[in-house]
Image (cartoon, rainbow, N blue to C red; front, side, top):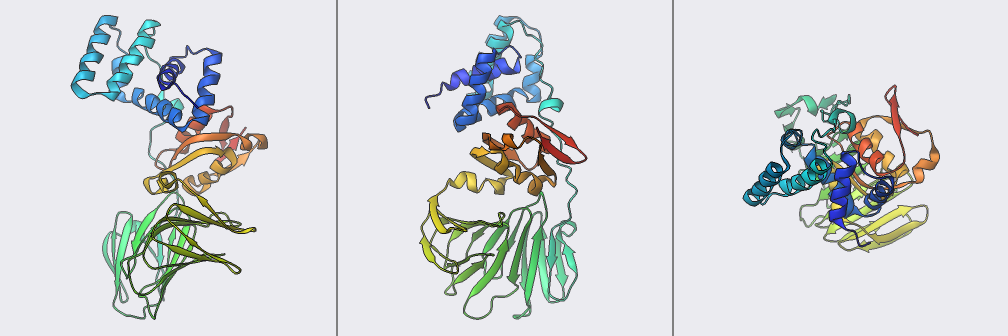
Length: 370
């Protein structure tokens, strides 16, 4: 697709100013749905124009010449991408005599802290009650285990070499990183459970993951195993992502190193950039986009030409809200865009709504897609 991104800028401004034609609006929505770069242009333009200092500037009534001089001067001084967009905004908005730029953030893009009421991050040590790591900070000693908990990560030291198996549970809307006793690190996405030995014994290292995790394995002569409901991974030193959210499908995505994937019937070796999918058809290999796959570590879920039904599976995990498709046919619509875990769910739903023909409402904490 040969997209004119300057046209996307201008049509976005016209859309915000409420003067876009029906034909141009259809073109804009279709393009940003099918072209990821066009979506980025559309989204960045809206975000920049919604910044308080830019909005305040645009809402002033001032002569056209003054606006052009100011924006051009600021563009030269800052190399300013922001003020380049501001110049475009001035051309469209002032040229159409729309001196009062109206774009209420509360209605379309509410900016507030995500108020998810979830349980805390739980650590179950052998022979103890659950420890709520969300309420613990700094050094915590439980039996023979000393835990260092800071922000959304932890490390630990077990005085007893045979300290047993621990379980770490991440609730909805959270993510967490743990450094294991051998120096390997595991980043856990929301609604994920990790079982791990407090000290690796014998001639191998083994952990169990249910959910999604990104793992960087420390080098050692001992092989490292990751067990999942349907497959087992064997590695020596590597970085990879595992996903078992779908009960009928598991995905293993290799960033670097080498991984052997084994199920009950087959085994295969993955190379960097390859993804193994295990489902009812066995093991299959494909390529994947690393930046999109690992975006969850930055509080984002990036999707490209993905059905609405697939996208809505993320909402319960990240926001703790049930989704009901009042109109099942809408689930077949495809989208390109981003969901933000650290913003209210309405923020991402409004972005999705703006790029396609669907609507939603929230009733009794249930999101209805209509």
